[in-house]
Length: 98
Image (tube, rainbow, N blue to C red):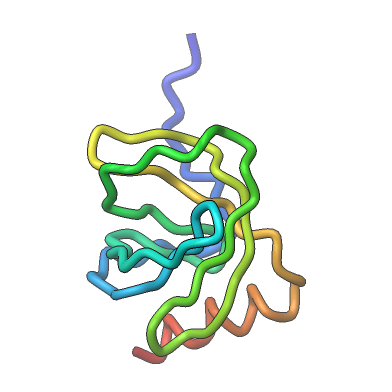
């Protein structure tokens, strides 16, 4: 059994509380990001969009992103960003500088 717990993520994770707007079923909902990286975000929400659903998200101070729901959590869900590599690298840089 492999006990190596190496984190294989491409981007550093930040545990920050950031407000956002999430478009769900043509309605915008205020939502809170509590863990974010250049590759995705964990959202605190009673809503659990279906896995694989493409969503639009406006993160305060960082801009607009699109992504798919990849995991449900006890207190929300995770979106993996599908934005261009340039945009994701810029987000990672912006997170490093805040």
